[in-house]
Amino acid sequence: MEMPNVRGRLIRGKSLSDLTWLRVGGPADWLFQPADVEDLTAFLAVLPPQVPVFPMGVGSNLIVRDGGLRAVVIRLGRGFNSIEVKGDRVRAGAAALDAHVARRAADAGLDLTFLRTIPGSIGGAVRMNAGCYGSYTADVLVEAQAVTRDGQVVSLRPDDLRFAYRHSELPEGWVITSALFEAERGEPEALHRKMEEQIAKRDATQPTRDRSAGSTFRNPAGYSSTGRADDVHDLKAWKVIDDAGLRGARLGGAQMSEMHSNFLINTGTATAADLEGLGEEVRKKVYAQSGITLEWEIMRIGEPLTSD
Image 1 (cartoon, rainbow, N blue to C red):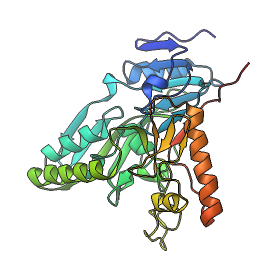
Image 2: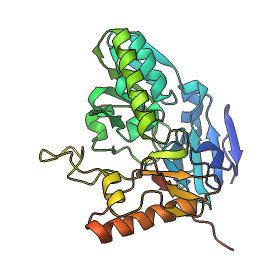
Image 3: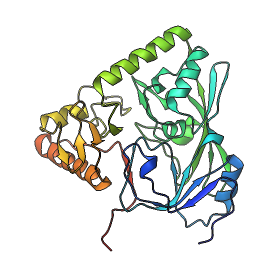
Image 4: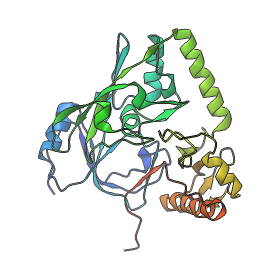
């Protein structure tokens, strides 16, 4: 298929393994890295509507299967990573890293500290309503800019996205390009100190030096921040994994971390099939042991590798 002319980079058959934190995955049909919003809108406006589009951030919460992805993967880069502070508001491009936004906000005395330990970019934070320490993207978002599948620029309010726990209802193929946040004020020194404490706590309890994609499974529904009025916070995914005797469990090059059993890691030789297979085995054994069905928090996309 003939592809539209672009000013950015358009690569055919690009392996996605180098673009994910787990370092696994086959090729995309195409990888498009637009130069700016105008480049993105022009591309999507003429791309045939039957061609699937998958917006991809920094790949921190993603397993791409070994057979790759039959789609155009859109990955935003330097033209989308600006961070601007004005008053009590911060506007960040979708490619800006969460940690960078948290630090810039703190410099200006604005509290977006919950973003500091989230390993991803702002587009993904909006798309998945990322959060920690009891704060979520939905709590601070004023609006997000996005480009629709047919190349129109739109502004989205929080109500438009219908946020839920680790979820938003962004239409398929739409690409978030920037977000505007409103934050409470604080002393810059105190905010930076708070983030340093968060980082120290994270590094002491999570395998941050291993190849992982963050938490593998959501905390069991009804025991975590699902947003329901009757929610409680007593049971964690790592606890039911431990109770099933699966801390350190292995399949090929995949392992449930010895340090934190809800972290699925690539020990160096894992395939996507190893990682997903181990995760499914954990789900099966946890259900058999406790009757609890763990839900994936890591997004899994693409096709398995076939022998054909």
